[in-house]
Length: 222
Image 1 (cartoon, helix red, strand yellow):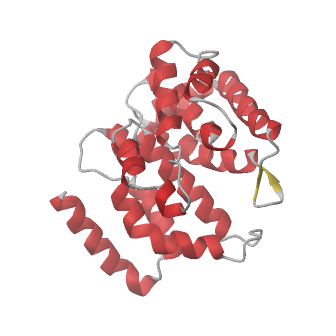
Image 2 (cartoon, helix red, strand yellow):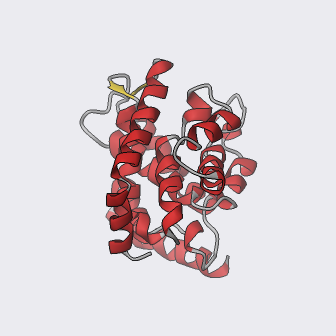
């Protein structure tokens, strides 16, 4: 889609998108989940959705995918953190969408749900990343999620003293490779502008070019 077409769709669906946003906020409030110990969890959901509003035209291929894409961004943690099941999320999505759209929306949420595990590595293993790579729009929403978390971790309001920033920095090469694939299908791409925004946050200038060379080589070879 062109940026104008995407923005026109957002404008046309403003009321519905706001209903989805409010429902997602309320769901996380119902389980008393917060973000950064000081914010309602909706603070994070809005940050993720902000990237979708801004860059969604780079991945969205048709008008009927706009709502599922926004739903996926607002509800991406609902199974993992808000005690929902796949069927629960699908039922919620059906409030605003037909079967096909609700399926796309629910699959995004499901793909971004961590596996069971005792450690961070176990919860985000190869099976988890494979699910993201193989689900339309899931790589984009996951990238938006990471960009939101990193932006907050690098902010003056972060209460974690940079601990998560260090983790995200260490994980970055593997993370980007794990959710990437060589494809011409826009639904699976990672927009360069978002990758650059993440690199700006965690990669020092002196290391940036070397990293980009390695990444371009990886993308070329697949």
